[in-house]
Image (cartoon, one colour):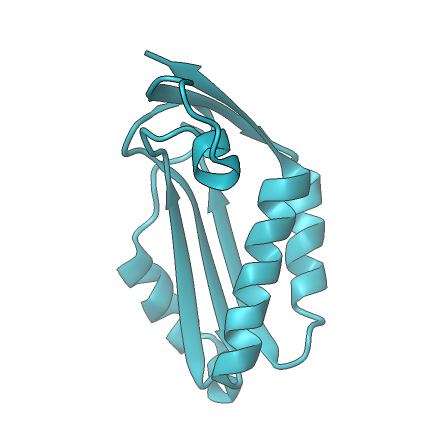
Length: 131
């Protein structure tokens, strides 16, 4: 684990105290966790892979910083915070937290989907380990 897992309650308190909070009508959080069901089974319907017991997880820190900076340029986005875990993570461990603050719900939902997608598709390496 790179750093201790953050508190979403603390993150929200800090976000609401940030000067940009006056422009935010919504904060939306994502908490990704390691699940027992293999990604290929969930996304592609491939059976017979077994159960996931852990995930080797790493990420491109500079790329994540750049993705955060880019997200802050999207329409209505005023606040972005991201934390990613690292190392061998077992089922139930947190992979990431992402917090988005935006002016309105559609902008917030779209930004969360887009940023998490960018991180998961382009900036992380996940290798599932099977039992």
